[in-house]
Image 1 (spheres, rainbow, N blue to C red):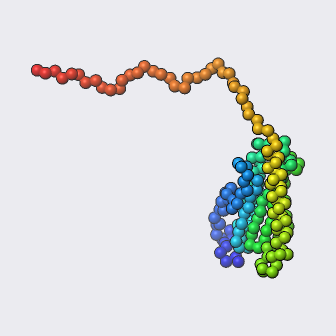
Image 2: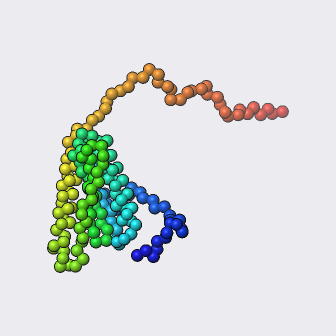
Length: 183
């Protein structure tokens, strides 16, 4: 498991750049309501970066976008994230119940069934979590759509309008040649 890793005291590790691009983003019209990050194998550093840093950043960015659109409904909104690493399914909830602090809650991980006969018993908690997440996203969508759109039509009157360009006399840059004189 640790064969390809290096110790930072001996070798300098390369910096891991985490971007905003997730494996899956939940959209409705122009708004984002949640995201999902997946990994194939267990025990990778991808789980640490994506769960601990990247997912939290993206959920906070989405929450900030909603802050700009509908400030009054911000305390009632809940954003949802899903983490699928190896055979574990975890739901992440992001909200601002106090209004000024972003709260991130991780639900207990659900182990995905490995045998076909266990699918009936072990898949039910995951489907329940996904359905609850869908209801939370629909509730957030409803809160965003309730706020009427505001259009600012105030026109500022300014006395000192500067010209967009200054005109100068037209000076020809073309050289005039003198007519040929025949002898």
